[in-house]
Length: 98
Image 1 (cartoon, rainbow, N blue to C red):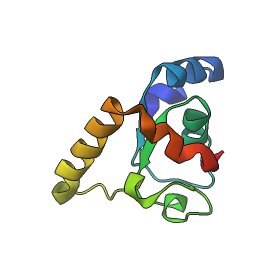
Image 2: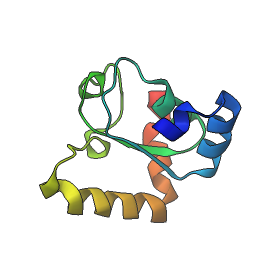
Image 3: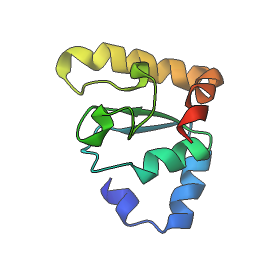
Image 4: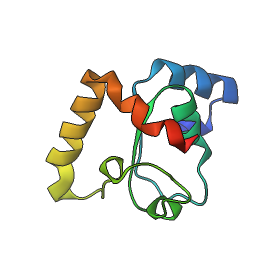
């Protein structure tokens, strides 16, 4: 996140448009802008459950894309990341988040 904080808005959008996946396990303080920007750019997202990310009303994505950041989830996270990178179909699952 520190890298993103140093970027200008136009740089963030440009990078998100190139990306296939944005992962954010940080603390979400409210309706998050960066995950939403990622989806608007055609990027799939994975979040954790910290802060407002725990609430569907704030981060409105399917549960399969919200994972707890803990040691016993490493394989599950890795599998999801791999599937997202291989299958563009995941981007369709975020259309209603906009």
